[in-house]
Image 1 (tube, rainbow, N blue to C red):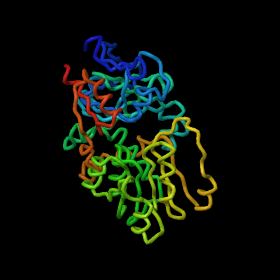
Image 2: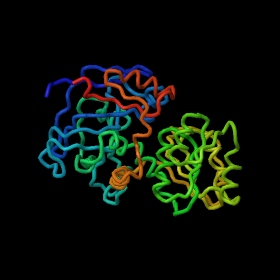
Image 3: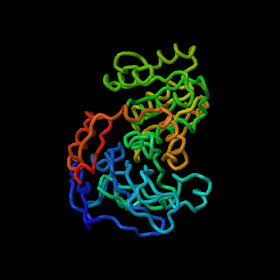
Image 4: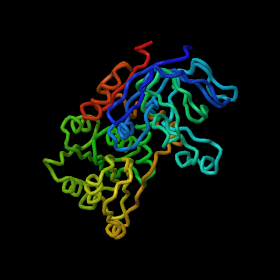
Amino acid sequence: METTMQGLVFHAARDVRVEEVPTPTLVEATDAILRIDKASICGSDLHPYTGRMDAEDGFTMGHEYMGTVVEAGASVQQFEVGDRALGSFFACCGACWLCRRGEFSKCLGAQVFGLGMAFGDLGGTQTEYARIPMADLTLRKIPDDVTDEQALFVGDILTTAYDAVRKTDLRSGDVVAVVGAGPVGLFAMMSALALGAAQVVVIDKVASRLALASSLGAIAVNADEADAQDVILELTDWRGADVVVDAVGHESALKAAMPLLRMGGHLTIPGVYMDDEFEFPIGELWIHNTTIHMGVANIQAHVDEVLALVRAGRIDPTALITHRLPLEQAAQGYELFASREALKVVLEPGATR
């Protein structure tokens, strides 16, 4: 391989550029080098991009990816050169007390790809190649009958949404409400249906996203045109939704989500809150016996389940792809994604090779 490659580099808020950066090499015997065949822009990438999160100049971005193994360390047992693989958005140690319990997302040594020093200083995957630590745990082989695009979101956004639903007390026949029809919300809707929900109500204000939710099997409610609480109460004989998903990560979404829950319901929050301060109605939640689930998704624990559902056709991740761009146009992709003109943007480093 060449000693340098193309990668998307963060410089400042709304200033990302494709530049020549060093090609990664093996550092540990448990590493693999992955040629990135497809990457994507995730909502978490917008935190540094929009300035919501302070970040230093100079790191490569991205953590949603799939590709082909081009080099494997001596201790890697599950992968050989030439294997197609998808990867989790973070790498963990695999050996600590939390990892041994299967709580990989809580590992104190976890590193997130492409979010700079604050999240572990691990190189990003919106690049031609990436070093993957703990490859046997971080990566999964892609079956021959699963396409690159079907696999792309399994290591991050799709499994994040699935994790949010799975860790509730969802039972077959339940009613689920999802606040927000962005990628997390739409994947949460698909996951809820795959896990046995009888009906899923998706609430948003963007007509095109609601139309997609409806085409994928949801009951779509435009919050500007109807009262979501009335819709859900009528649907559930006035008890409320069994599970409500806050897929936005904003105070307004949380306020919209809570009235939709039944007594003893489950509120799950895959939406990212970053040190936001606002009044939290603990008394109301206590009175209603609400169970709350939140935090970083346990990707490594659930990725095999999600990959199986995708392979069986129970979930179609490609339905959310609206734009495909070569890596050299990544900055344009970020503009489209940040302005909500795009739902999911696929970047193709291979287009520049």
